[in-house]
Image (cartoon, rainbow, N blue to C red; front, top):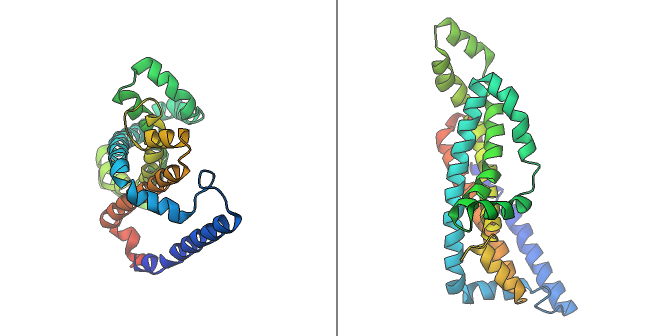
Length: 253
């Protein structure tokens, strides 16, 4: 953990240099603001327009968190069922893979036709984006249980339920958190896409209104907000992982 913090200045420095280079190139080339605004213009708009943007940010945050929670629960339960019942895994797992080949942006209009413009189609979109990484990661984690420990518990008379909850599930926690971190970042993207279905507020709505009025600086404010929100979600999952999977992180302290 401490090593990661010490190395954190490197990407921050690279990002700062990129912003400086961006600012210089735009100013020297005299690129119009509606085409590509400089970082200073974007930062100024973020400060001045915060009062107008913050409700949209809050709306997207709530939607993404709700979708992430539902998608995570569905993904984890699906993984447990597929792991414990091999027949279902062999029958359903290929269909789960095929489901990920359908673009969400194409499926979204159908969800509006079937379920209307309410909250349900938006939650479905985020759930579809979030549940698959957790399901796959958890299934892989269940398979990584040490064979000698499994053999020992069976010799001790452990039931299938005890074997799963006391051995296989704890061993899969690092993999489950890996899937959660991926889903956490996807949830924000899924929330923005779902807001394009006809929401009254949210970053997706803010981006649509800004692009239609050629306010490129506001579009970049929305883009950076999405990035920062995804990093916050990722950091929250990482913090929970560090506290719950201590044996995995001892080498980083």
